[in-house]
Image (cartoon, rainbow, N blue to C red; front, side, top):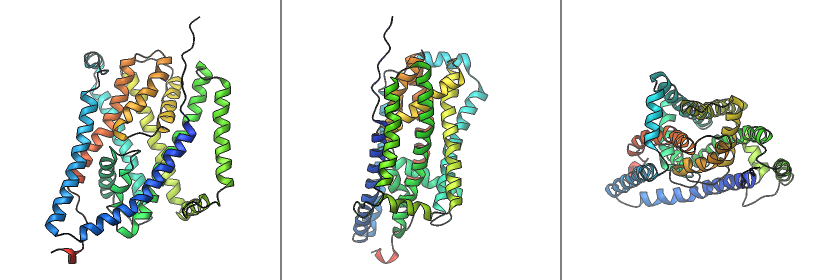
Length: 358
Protein backbone atom coordinates (compact mmCIF):
# COMPACT_ATOMS: atom_id res chain seq x y z
CA UNK A 1 0.00 0.00 0.00
CA UNK A 2 1.45 3.34 -1.06
CA UNK A 3 1.59 5.78 1.87
CA UNK A 4 -0.30 9.05 1.45
CA UNK A 5 1.85 12.11 0.80
CA UNK A 6 2.28 14.33 3.81
CA UNK A 7 1.60 18.03 3.75
CA UNK A 8 2.72 20.66 6.19
CA UNK A 9 -0.18 23.07 6.42
CA UNK A 10 0.80 26.69 7.03
CA UNK A 11 -0.75 28.41 10.01
CA UNK A 12 -3.33 29.84 7.63
CA UNK A 13 -5.43 31.91 9.96
CA UNK A 14 -2.60 33.22 12.20
CA UNK A 15 -0.45 34.00 9.17
CA UNK A 16 -3.37 35.65 7.41
CA UNK A 17 -4.09 37.85 10.40
CA UNK A 18 -0.39 38.57 10.89
CA UNK A 19 -0.10 39.56 7.24
CA UNK A 20 -3.22 41.75 7.58
CA UNK A 21 -1.82 43.41 10.71
CA UNK A 22 1.59 43.99 9.11
CA UNK A 23 -0.06 45.63 6.10
CA UNK A 24 -2.16 47.81 8.39
CA UNK A 25 0.80 48.87 10.55
CA UNK A 26 3.01 49.42 7.49
CA UNK A 27 0.26 51.52 5.96
CA UNK A 28 0.08 53.69 9.06
CA UNK A 29 3.87 54.00 9.14
CA UNK A 30 3.77 55.26 5.55
CA UNK A 31 1.92 58.39 6.69
CA UNK A 32 5.01 59.78 8.46
CA UNK A 33 7.28 58.63 5.63
CA UNK A 34 5.14 60.45 3.08
CA UNK A 35 5.14 63.60 5.21
CA UNK A 36 8.96 63.54 5.46
CA UNK A 37 9.20 63.02 1.70
CA UNK A 38 7.07 66.07 0.96
CA UNK A 39 8.90 68.13 3.58
CA UNK A 40 12.18 67.28 1.87
CA UNK A 41 10.70 68.07 -1.55
CA UNK A 42 9.64 71.52 -0.39
CA UNK A 43 13.08 72.41 0.99
CA UNK A 44 15.10 71.71 -2.18
CA UNK A 45 15.27 73.51 -5.56
CA UNK A 46 12.65 72.74 -8.20
CA UNK A 47 15.15 71.27 -10.70
CA UNK A 48 16.50 68.94 -8.03
CA UNK A 49 12.96 67.88 -7.16
CA UNK A 50 12.28 67.00 -10.78
CA UNK A 51 15.48 64.95 -10.94
CA UNK A 52 14.66 63.06 -7.71
CA UNK A 53 11.11 62.30 -8.85
CA UNK A 54 12.43 61.02 -12.19
CA UNK A 55 15.01 58.90 -10.38
CA UNK A 56 12.33 57.34 -8.15
CA UNK A 57 10.16 56.62 -11.20
CA UNK A 58 13.04 54.92 -13.03
CA UNK A 59 13.95 52.88 -9.94
CA UNK A 60 10.36 51.66 -9.57
CA UNK A 61 9.93 50.77 -13.24
CA UNK A 62 13.46 49.39 -13.59
CA UNK A 63 13.10 47.28 -10.46
CA UNK A 64 9.74 45.90 -11.61
CA UNK A 65 11.08 44.89 -15.03
CA UNK A 66 14.25 43.39 -13.54
CA UNK A 67 12.29 41.15 -11.17
CA UNK A 68 9.93 40.06 -13.94
CA UNK A 69 12.82 39.19 -16.26
CA UNK A 70 14.77 37.32 -13.57
CA UNK A 71 11.78 35.17 -12.63
CA UNK A 72 11.06 34.20 -16.25
CA UNK A 73 14.67 33.75 -17.35
CA UNK A 74 15.93 31.78 -14.34
CA UNK A 75 13.05 29.34 -13.88
CA UNK A 76 14.46 26.01 -15.09
CA UNK A 77 11.15 24.24 -14.43
CA UNK A 78 9.48 25.93 -17.40
CA UNK A 79 9.56 23.40 -20.24
CA UNK A 80 8.99 25.65 -23.25
CA UNK A 81 9.26 22.75 -25.72
CA UNK A 82 6.31 20.92 -24.18
CA UNK A 83 4.41 24.20 -23.88
CA UNK A 84 4.82 24.95 -27.59
CA UNK A 85 3.79 21.38 -28.45
CA UNK A 86 0.57 21.63 -26.42
CA UNK A 87 -0.10 25.14 -27.72
CA UNK A 88 0.27 24.09 -31.38
CA UNK A 89 -2.01 21.13 -30.72
CA UNK A 90 -4.78 23.13 -29.03
CA UNK A 91 -4.19 26.61 -30.45
CA UNK A 92 -7.35 28.58 -30.90
CA UNK A 93 -7.79 32.29 -31.50
CA UNK A 94 -11.07 32.11 -29.60
CA UNK A 95 -9.45 30.28 -26.67
CA UNK A 96 -6.54 32.72 -26.40
CA UNK A 97 -8.92 35.67 -26.72
CA UNK A 98 -11.14 34.24 -23.98
CA UNK A 99 -8.21 33.85 -21.54
CA UNK A 100 -7.06 37.42 -22.28
CA UNK A 101 -10.63 38.66 -21.77
CA UNK A 102 -10.67 37.06 -18.30
CA UNK A 103 -7.44 38.92 -17.45
CA UNK A 104 -8.97 42.20 -18.60
CA UNK A 105 -12.13 41.53 -16.58
CA UNK A 106 -10.07 40.61 -13.51
CA UNK A 107 -8.27 43.95 -13.51
CA UNK A 108 -11.40 45.84 -14.64
CA UNK A 109 -13.36 44.65 -11.61
CA UNK A 110 -10.47 45.77 -9.40
CA UNK A 111 -10.55 49.19 -11.09
CA UNK A 112 -14.31 49.45 -10.49
CA UNK A 113 -13.80 48.42 -6.85
CA UNK A 114 -11.33 51.24 -6.30
CA UNK A 115 -13.49 53.76 -8.18
CA UNK A 116 -16.40 52.79 -5.93
CA UNK A 117 -14.39 53.10 -2.69
CA UNK A 118 -12.55 56.27 -3.73
CA UNK A 119 -15.91 57.97 -4.26
CA UNK A 120 -16.12 58.15 -0.45
CA UNK A 121 -13.34 60.79 -0.66
CA UNK A 122 -14.11 62.30 -4.05
CA UNK A 123 -15.62 60.99 -7.32
CA UNK A 124 -13.06 59.74 -9.84
CA UNK A 125 -13.54 58.54 -13.41
CA UNK A 126 -12.90 54.98 -14.58
CA UNK A 127 -9.82 56.25 -16.46
CA UNK A 128 -8.46 57.93 -13.31
CA UNK A 129 -9.13 54.77 -11.31
CA UNK A 130 -7.31 52.73 -13.96
CA UNK A 131 -4.32 55.02 -13.71
CA UNK A 132 -4.20 54.77 -9.91
CA UNK A 133 -4.70 50.99 -9.74
CA UNK A 134 -2.07 50.14 -12.38
CA UNK A 135 0.50 52.64 -11.10
CA UNK A 136 -0.01 51.41 -7.53
CA UNK A 137 0.38 47.78 -8.67
CA UNK A 138 3.70 48.68 -10.31
CA UNK A 139 4.87 50.48 -7.16
CA UNK A 140 3.89 47.53 -4.98
CA UNK A 141 5.22 44.70 -7.12
CA UNK A 142 8.48 44.28 -5.16
CA UNK A 143 7.33 45.34 -1.69
CA UNK A 144 6.20 42.87 1.03
CA UNK A 145 2.49 42.07 0.67
CA UNK A 146 2.13 44.92 -1.84
CA UNK A 147 2.58 47.65 0.81
CA UNK A 148 3.89 49.95 -1.94
CA UNK A 149 0.40 49.85 -3.44
CA UNK A 150 -0.88 51.93 -0.51
CA UNK A 151 1.77 54.57 -1.15
CA UNK A 152 1.11 54.55 -4.89
CA UNK A 153 -2.58 55.35 -4.50
CA UNK A 154 -2.06 57.89 -1.70
CA UNK A 155 0.18 60.01 -3.93
CA UNK A 156 -2.76 60.69 -6.25
CA UNK A 157 -4.71 62.37 -3.45
CA UNK A 158 -4.18 65.38 -1.20
CA UNK A 159 -1.95 64.85 1.82
CA UNK A 160 -4.94 65.47 4.07
CA UNK A 161 -6.65 62.39 2.57
CA UNK A 162 -3.72 60.00 3.12
CA UNK A 163 -5.29 58.21 6.10
CA UNK A 164 -8.58 57.76 4.26
CA UNK A 165 -6.87 56.43 1.12
CA UNK A 166 -4.86 53.89 3.13
CA UNK A 167 -7.97 52.79 5.02
CA UNK A 168 -10.06 52.45 1.84
CA UNK A 169 -7.31 50.45 0.16
CA UNK A 170 -7.29 48.20 3.22
CA UNK A 171 -11.04 47.70 2.73
CA UNK A 172 -10.49 47.06 -0.98
CA UNK A 173 -7.92 44.33 -0.34
CA UNK A 174 -9.67 43.10 2.79
CA UNK A 175 -12.88 42.05 1.07
CA UNK A 176 -10.85 40.03 -1.45
CA UNK A 177 -9.07 38.29 1.43
CA UNK A 178 -12.38 37.54 3.19
CA UNK A 179 -13.82 36.02 0.01
CA UNK A 180 -10.64 33.98 -0.51
CA UNK A 181 -10.95 32.61 3.03
CA UNK A 182 -14.67 31.79 2.69
CA UNK A 183 -14.42 30.04 -0.69
CA UNK A 184 -11.10 28.50 0.34
CA UNK A 185 -12.61 26.90 3.45
CA UNK A 186 -15.36 25.25 1.43
CA UNK A 187 -12.90 24.18 -1.26
CA UNK A 188 -10.41 22.78 1.24
CA UNK A 189 -13.08 20.82 3.13
CA UNK A 190 -14.48 19.37 -0.11
CA UNK A 191 -11.00 18.48 -1.39
CA UNK A 192 -10.15 16.85 1.92
CA UNK A 193 -13.46 14.93 1.91
CA UNK A 194 -12.63 13.51 -1.53
CA UNK A 195 -8.92 12.75 -1.03
CA UNK A 196 -8.30 12.75 2.75
CA UNK A 197 -5.08 14.77 2.46
CA UNK A 198 -5.49 16.03 6.02
CA UNK A 199 -6.50 14.11 9.14
CA UNK A 200 -10.03 14.90 10.33
CA UNK A 201 -8.58 16.24 13.59
CA UNK A 202 -6.51 18.80 11.68
CA UNK A 203 -9.53 20.01 9.71
CA UNK A 204 -11.56 20.40 12.90
CA UNK A 205 -8.64 22.17 14.57
CA UNK A 206 -8.45 24.72 11.71
CA UNK A 207 -12.21 25.34 11.89
CA UNK A 208 -12.28 25.67 15.67
CA UNK A 209 -9.17 27.85 15.58
CA UNK A 210 -10.83 30.24 13.15
CA UNK A 211 -14.04 30.43 15.19
CA UNK A 212 -12.05 30.95 18.41
CA UNK A 213 -10.02 33.73 16.79
CA UNK A 214 -13.18 35.58 15.72
CA UNK A 215 -14.69 35.22 19.19
CA UNK A 216 -11.50 36.47 20.88
CA UNK A 217 -11.16 39.45 18.53
CA UNK A 218 -14.69 40.63 19.19
CA UNK A 219 -14.43 40.02 22.93
CA UNK A 220 -11.42 42.36 23.17
CA UNK A 221 -12.71 44.89 20.63
CA UNK A 222 -12.52 47.73 23.16
CA UNK A 223 -8.83 47.18 23.95
CA UNK A 224 -6.79 50.01 22.41
CA UNK A 225 -3.34 49.54 20.85
CA UNK A 226 -1.52 52.76 19.91
CA UNK A 227 -4.85 54.55 19.64
CA UNK A 228 -6.47 51.84 17.51
CA UNK A 229 -9.02 49.19 18.48
CA UNK A 230 -11.31 46.76 16.70
CA UNK A 231 -14.30 48.78 17.94
CA UNK A 232 -12.94 51.93 16.27
CA UNK A 233 -12.11 49.98 13.12
CA UNK A 234 -15.67 48.62 12.93
CA UNK A 235 -17.04 52.13 13.52
CA UNK A 236 -14.93 53.49 10.65
CA UNK A 237 -16.13 50.69 8.38
CA UNK A 238 -19.76 51.38 9.32
CA UNK A 239 -19.27 55.07 8.56
CA UNK A 240 -18.88 54.19 4.88
CA UNK A 241 -22.30 54.20 3.11
CA UNK A 242 -23.94 50.79 2.83
CA UNK A 243 -24.27 51.15 -0.94
CA UNK A 244 -20.49 51.39 -1.32
CA UNK A 245 -20.04 48.23 0.79
CA UNK A 246 -22.61 46.30 -1.27
CA UNK A 247 -20.94 47.25 -4.56
CA UNK A 248 -17.53 46.41 -3.11
CA UNK A 249 -18.67 42.91 -2.08
CA UNK A 250 -20.39 42.32 -5.44
CA UNK A 251 -17.34 43.43 -7.46
CA UNK A 252 -15.07 41.38 -5.18
CA UNK A 253 -17.18 38.27 -5.86
CA UNK A 254 -17.06 38.97 -9.61
CA UNK A 255 -13.30 39.30 -9.50
CA UNK A 256 -12.87 36.08 -7.51
CA UNK A 257 -15.14 34.22 -9.93
CA UNK A 258 -13.12 35.50 -12.91
CA UNK A 259 -9.57 34.72 -11.79
CA UNK A 260 -10.45 31.36 -10.21
CA UNK A 261 -12.12 30.23 -13.43
CA UNK A 262 -9.22 31.56 -15.50
CA UNK A 263 -7.07 29.08 -13.54
CA UNK A 264 -9.63 26.37 -14.33
CA UNK A 265 -9.78 27.10 -18.08
CA UNK A 266 -5.99 27.21 -18.37
CA UNK A 267 -5.84 23.67 -16.99
CA UNK A 268 -8.44 22.62 -19.54
CA UNK A 269 -6.24 24.18 -22.24
CA UNK A 270 -3.40 21.91 -21.13
CA UNK A 271 -5.61 18.80 -21.54
CA UNK A 272 -6.24 18.34 -17.82
CA UNK A 273 -9.52 16.41 -17.73
CA UNK A 274 -10.92 16.46 -14.20
CA UNK A 275 -14.43 17.00 -12.74
CA UNK A 276 -15.36 20.67 -12.37
CA UNK A 277 -15.93 20.57 -8.59
CA UNK A 278 -12.69 18.69 -7.94
CA UNK A 279 -10.58 21.09 -9.98
CA UNK A 280 -12.28 24.19 -8.54
CA UNK A 281 -11.86 22.83 -4.99
CA UNK A 282 -8.13 22.54 -5.64
CA UNK A 283 -8.00 26.07 -7.12
CA UNK A 284 -9.82 27.67 -4.17
CA UNK A 285 -7.65 25.72 -1.70
CA UNK A 286 -4.48 26.92 -3.42
CA UNK A 287 -5.59 30.56 -3.30
CA UNK A 288 -6.64 30.22 0.34
CA UNK A 289 -3.36 28.74 1.58
CA UNK A 290 -1.10 30.80 -0.70
CA UNK A 291 -2.77 34.11 0.19
CA UNK A 292 -2.18 33.47 3.90
CA UNK A 293 1.59 33.36 3.36
CA UNK A 294 3.47 36.71 3.44
CA UNK A 295 5.20 37.29 0.10
CA UNK A 296 6.23 39.80 -2.55
CA UNK A 297 3.92 40.26 -5.55
CA UNK A 298 6.72 39.47 -8.00
CA UNK A 299 7.10 36.10 -6.21
CA UNK A 300 3.34 35.45 -6.18
CA UNK A 301 3.49 32.77 -8.86
CA UNK A 302 6.27 30.95 -6.99
CA UNK A 303 4.26 30.92 -3.75
CA UNK A 304 1.04 29.83 -5.45
CA UNK A 305 2.99 27.42 -7.64
CA UNK A 306 4.58 25.67 -4.66
CA UNK A 307 1.17 25.20 -2.97
CA UNK A 308 -0.41 24.17 -6.30
CA UNK A 309 2.24 21.49 -6.83
CA UNK A 310 0.91 19.57 -3.85
CA UNK A 311 -2.84 19.89 -4.48
CA UNK A 312 -2.77 19.28 -8.23
CA UNK A 313 -0.08 16.63 -7.73
CA UNK A 314 -2.62 14.68 -5.65
CA UNK A 315 -4.92 14.89 -8.70
CA UNK A 316 -2.20 13.42 -10.92
CA UNK A 317 -1.49 16.58 -12.94
CA UNK A 318 2.04 16.76 -14.42
CA UNK A 319 4.42 19.06 -12.54
CA UNK A 320 5.43 21.08 -15.61
CA UNK A 321 1.76 21.83 -16.40
CA UNK A 322 1.18 23.09 -12.84
CA UNK A 323 4.26 25.35 -13.06
CA UNK A 324 3.24 26.70 -16.46
CA UNK A 325 -0.35 27.44 -15.46
CA UNK A 326 0.82 29.22 -12.28
CA UNK A 327 3.35 31.23 -14.31
CA UNK A 328 0.79 32.15 -16.97
CA UNK A 329 -1.64 33.33 -14.28
CA UNK A 330 1.12 35.51 -12.84
CA UNK A 331 2.14 36.82 -16.27
CA UNK A 332 -1.41 37.64 -17.38
CA UNK A 333 -2.60 39.20 -14.11
CA UNK A 334 0.55 40.80 -12.71
CA UNK A 335 3.23 41.23 -15.39
CA UNK A 336 1.03 42.74 -18.12
CA UNK A 337 -0.72 45.19 -15.73
CA UNK A 338 2.71 46.17 -14.31
CA UNK A 339 3.98 46.92 -17.83
CA UNK A 340 0.92 49.12 -18.44
CA UNK A 341 1.26 50.68 -15.00
CA UNK A 342 4.86 51.64 -15.75
CA UNK A 343 3.54 54.17 -18.26
CA UNK A 344 1.49 55.88 -15.55
CA UNK A 345 4.39 55.79 -13.08
CA UNK A 346 6.71 57.50 -15.58
CA UNK A 347 4.05 60.12 -16.35
CA UNK A 348 3.14 60.78 -12.73
CA UNK A 349 3.54 64.41 -11.67
CA UNK A 350 3.91 65.31 -8.00
CA UNK A 351 1.74 68.05 -6.58
CA UNK A 352 4.29 70.74 -5.71
CA UNK A 353 3.07 74.10 -4.41
CA UNK A 354 3.82 76.94 -6.79
CA UNK A 355 5.46 79.04 -4.05
CA UNK A 356 8.05 76.31 -3.50
CA UNK A 357 9.49 76.69 -6.99
CA UNK A 358 12.79 78.54 -6.89
